[in-house]
Length: 303
Image (cartoon, rainbow, N blue to C red):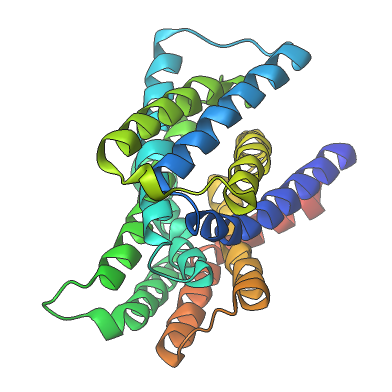
C-alpha cells in the first residue's frame, strides 16, 4: 500500500510539472508554426511513440465495442476540439492566463460528476467554489465584456470551453473506461486526432510561412513525448486509482507553474483584473474540492 501511495504521489507531481510547462512550450511553438498543424504533428508523433511503448510493454489494444466508442470520444472531445481551441487561443492570450482559464477544469469536473457518477453529490463547499470560480472568470473577462466580441475575448472563451470538454471526457472515462489500458488507450485517439488536425491545417491554415526551426521542432517533440505520451498515460493510470475530483486538483497547481515560467521566459505580465480573477478562480478550485480532499486525506490516515 505504501508503494502504491508513493507511485500515486510521484505520478501526481509528474503531471503537475509537465502540464505546468506545456503552456509555455505551446506558446514557443506558435511563434514558428500554425496552431492546428502544430497540434496535429504533436499527436501524430505521440502516436508513433505510444506504439513503441506498447510494443516494449506488451500492452494490447482493446477492440470491443465500448472501447471503440470511448476511443472516438477521446479523439474528438479530449484531443481534436480542446487542443485546437487551446493552441489557437494561446496565439492571443499569455500562457499563464491560458493555464488559469483552464483551471476551471475541476469546477466542471465537480458539476459533470454530479450528473454522471452515481452517489456523487455536490457539497456546500463545492457550490461556494463554483461561485468563486465563475466570479473570477468574470473578472478575467471584464475588459472584454462588451457587445463587440474581440479576438482576445474569443480566445479566452474557447480555452474555457476546452476545459469543459476535457472535464466531460475525464468523467466519461472514469465512469465507463475502467477496463482500458492506460498505455494503449490513447493510441487510436491521438493517431486519428493527429491525422484529422493535419488535414484541417493543410486545408484551412496558411502554412506557407511556417518555420521549422528549433522552437517549432522542440515544441512538437517535447509536447509529443512529455505532454502527451508520458502525461496522459500517467493521468489515466492515476484516474483508475484516485477520485476524478481529487485528480483534477492538478489544475490548481499547473497555473502557478505556468505563470512563473511565462514570467521568467516570456516576460508575460498579468494586469490587476486578471490577478484578482485568477486568485478567485484558484480559491474556487480549493473550495470546490475541499470535502473530497479532506475525505481522501483521512481515508489514507485510516489505512
